[in-house]
Image (cartoon, rainbow, N blue to C red):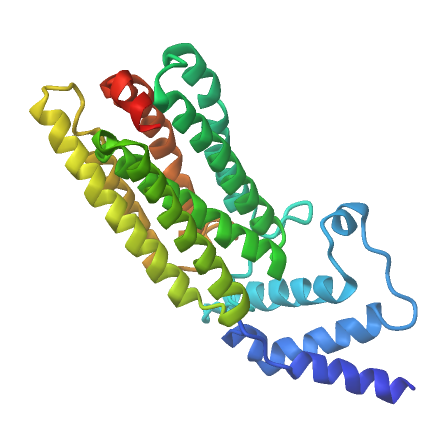
Length: 315
């Protein structure tokens, strides 16, 4: 029986996963994980602290985490290369949270969406169509960043899928708002057609990822393409507002340029500073001021450009 258990552990350790990396493929990590599993998880498993059980850590997960940390600390002392494990850098967890910095920054992004709800009530007339649009944006924003925080707390297939699918909703909605704004003069049918087309595109995107092939590259290309289309349309709107002498017409363009520069952090992909701050977490940090200033412009400038009578006819 012991032989079968050991054999099973070895098989588990050597099975390649979709997001395998150089760290989890190394013999040093595999041997460490097997030994830890045999010593702590076999016959009399060492009970995990409550905070690890709450965040759904298993004994095997805990072994892998400690092996990653031991090997990483040794690599730092020796000045050798730091490896990724299962597609992620070896972060130092806090209270069971895998990526503390990304969680904190995600929650801060969500917070600035949340507090904008009250600002909309105070500054945007309820008869103004943008009142509803912006409130929907708040709900989507809180939903998206909540799932981002959950995913970075514990990376499971379900939390990953929810993070990706939620982010796509936000990207598409940021295309929906300016598109409908531009077709306002064509009536309800045009607005409804925009909604139907974008909804169908989103549903197909989710269907493809879930049931045909979950491709990180495909997901990135789709979201980047939609984001590019949205950027172009927001630029058109900025130009139209400039022609109407609207103050701060340039804000969307500046925020888009800032976001594009900040997104370049993702390309750096360096080992986490202080065991917490990698390029991805800093990208989340960089979007916090964007969220704040974007709402300031949407509420104080964009909403004031609506000709209510025209939009009420369109909707």
